[in-house]
Length: 338
Image (cartoon, rainbow, N blue to C red; front, top):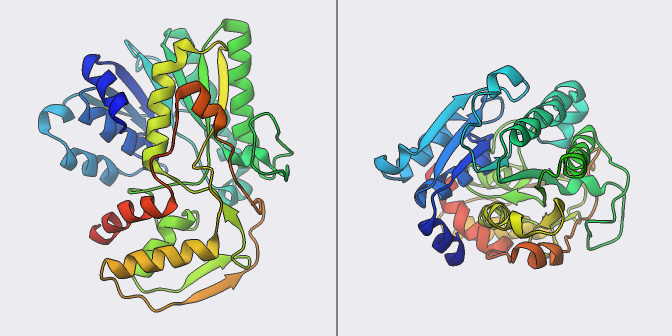
């Protein structure tokens, strides 16, 4: 966490509600906020989150700080169960979602239930309970088939998957709430966030944790396409900064709704990603034989991605503290130990 953010949190204790708190980004937000003496209410149904993520957070902080955390096992699709959770909440950090483009193609109905109906439940209850700010995770997938690089917030194409449709719908709902109710919210368009506690297992695992785990286990690594696909990989600490900065600065924003890219502003292809992971795991004394296998390009994915982060810099003073290589150096030792 940035020093200027730490200074603000040292002087003021807020109550933060994190949805998807047992997931990758949610659990990292939880750890950062508890470390700095904040109160946190967490929601998760463990559909994609894991109890071991919460256990890992608990083990990493003091017992007294852990007492500032209240957990509710709730599906965000269940409005009635959510109604009493928001009391005295200052900020909502909405991370809960069914991620993964392939998952959404396989099961668009459940993806819509969680990502659209669940989102609307959280948004409506945040408005009803007069929270100071609503920050939610959206996605670079909303840029769809728009080919221009770097990606700018006001230039999007046609969505290429049900997942992308759900994230675009979230943005439209938040914008509509800002116009009709004056409710303030910020959508963070994440670009390929990675870091500790990101699940490396299963058919829908993201590329970074899956490849790290494969190298640790000395298993074959599959690349979708020829390896020239590019992404703007964003380390988790950058995303944490963006969430907290957005919450703390939301009342200063002229518009009631803003959406902004959260990334590094650097393009790296998958072949380079492989070389970096291979090099860093080797330096951590993990022996891996190079085993690369190229497969067909994955349906619903975009070929190239690069973010323009100038809007986030302007609105919330965001700047990425970690690039891809620096982030991998931070998180690979965690995967080796765990």
